[in-house]
Amino acid sequence: MTAHMTPWKVTGNTPVAAILLLAVLYTGASSMRSQARTAGFDMAPKMRLSDYGFFTGDLSALHPAPRVFAYEVNAPLFSDYAEKARFIFLPEGEKMTCNDSLSLDFPNGSVLIKNFFYFHDAEHPENGRRILETRLLIKDEKGWKALEYIWNDEQTDAVLEVAGASFPVQWTDVSGKKRSIQYIAPNLNQCKGCHSYDGRFIPLGATIRQLNQYPAAGNQLLSWQESGLIDLPSGFDVSSAPRLADYRQASPGNIDDRARAYLDANCGHCHNPHGPANTSGMFLNITERNPERLGVGKAPVAAGRGSGDRKFGIVPGKPNESILLYRMESDDPGIRMPELGRQLPHQEGLDLIKTWIKEMK
Image (cartoon, rainbow, N blue to C red; front, side, top):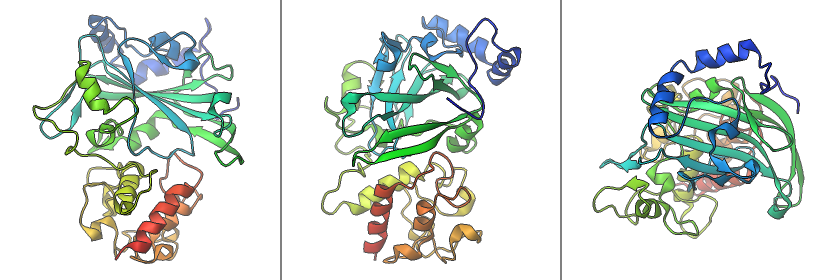
């Protein structure tokens, strides 16, 4: 594996600089350790993913240990066609809560675990996969912190990497086409950039809108409540609670729901009044209902090549004159949106947004 910076090797000769950097990065590690030991689980930052004990047996099988459970989201973030396996760890005796405003709260010591991988052949998942990275979001008394782990070629473990990494990846997509990219795992500062809400670090996918869904086992929120993993408000009704549409599933009459869900998941974490792109004045989060703030007939705050000589964010009925679509189509690092997390244009997402704008009145 080649990379901009080689992941730290876990040996008896681990570089002193690496150890010092880890200490600086997590100055609160001792308090996390004290808190986690009280819960019977040492959550201090580890050099190897396996050291946490989140999974049992063969690590690459991602078989969850006790207090670790899988979850799914309604509208996933596009990441160059990478698949994700998502898990939540809760300390013993703790549970998530959902307050009257339907925001989700996690107890200290909780960990959100997201594994990025590609099937060797997406048409035949039974032929195996390659896990590339695992991102942890760890909750302590000071808030959320991110850690990034890069998997080795043998798929036996993943090693802490604070500076990000880049390496080639090849796979066969669902149409049988062979694909390849130089995969980029973010550094910790880039993680903070996307997860910012009024300057605070927050999770993105662990929301009622994303979690209120029906995978094979039934509604996961209700399943967690039955298992004692979450407290839902009295009278909570999943049928009336917020839910993002699954933009991947087309059905008659739901183009607006699907498009808005796609934009919320892929753009709205930055393009909202509290996000890093709040100065743009273009807000793509699901709760925005003002057409101009959504970009309809809105001129860009800053012109330049990012506009592609187009005048407005969204031109109803004319997707090819809309800046939004132009930036989604681009693979130029200085133009493309989102700026981070993708290199390839998302063709299915482009088709969805193009149809949405074309049908817009």
